[in-house]
Figure 1 (cartoon, rainbow over the protein chains, first blue to last red):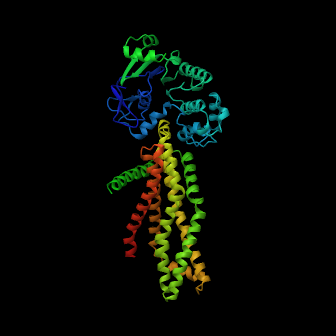
Figure 2 (cartoon, each protein chain N blue to C red):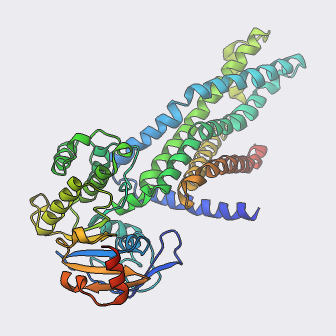
Length: 248
Length: 253
């Protein structure tokens, strides 16, 4: 992203974060933090090419998002996995299996029967095999978030964007997410052993300090990048200190 | 009025996008899209068939049966055929079939699509690299259009059969074959493509207005009820306007 102004998804003229200069390289793990409503979700959706922006340029995998045609944009999005916050924006009327199988079926022109083995073993990998036949709209939030992760990963994306991965989770689920994200970062065998590029947006960065390699903050309409955890934890900007101290 | 004109332009643009997607992505993911289109045909066609046949028979009893008897009484039986064709085949059957599909399935479709839009499922589809128009709109376009075309035929048959039955039991001295021959003689060869065109137009119009109001407006959950009401009103008005467009053609026959 080059000098981008991120806007509110429902009000395209309302700027949320301006002056975003951000480069995500392959294999990196970014933790983007900020208060609720500071534009973290809008930032992820702009990076995924899902919403417009007011100025600047967004390039994803070498393609300018603004000028890209509809089909080109859809092709780019296949290389990105996006896990939405909350209930993960699952297709509530469909089962967990159908939710996870859909991208595989659509892009591979396959029926549910064709992908049964692959999706079942994938659900088992993420500890979701017991929920396979449950309607997505009826499962508890922590499990729904994991199903959303499964749906985002089924196409083996190169870049994974996760909105609030640890929000409202108990200790068991937090432990699972931290372990799984770490394995993705180091190179999970199920994904070819190659380190995945991660961007994690969070209201509370402390549980992700051990995973993140680079950090950024959205605060008061501004964007700030930090190279390392040490720089992030010991920054001397008074506004950011107030934000970070307020999170303690 | 101005709002209606603005909406018409937007629905027109939406229709062009949907038809364009139907054409350009016709061979894309058929193993996903075809079952969805089949489901819509089942929902809007097969499941609605009993209601359409019942309504057709009711129309037949009320309009066909009584009209035929009146014509017999005034000695104008030669007008029977043209009247059946004009009233039932050309006007009532296509319009009624479209309205039944709208009422029975269309309102539910607006709610489904509106809910999907409001809770962010449409963005989720885009994030997965799936064209929401291709996945959500095209199956409904195919399903509703095929259903309305087929249901119109069933409605015509039900109306004519029921109407003849009522007239026969009340003293019409005409065999069934003779009655249907009279109707067939009144049909022009142009009636068939025109009926097909009209029902196709109703199908496309109904499905596009439904999908537009479900998807294209930035809906919140509380807006869905209003969108449903608007869909019904606008589909009714648009169908009557399209119906009126065919009138000059029929008058020239």
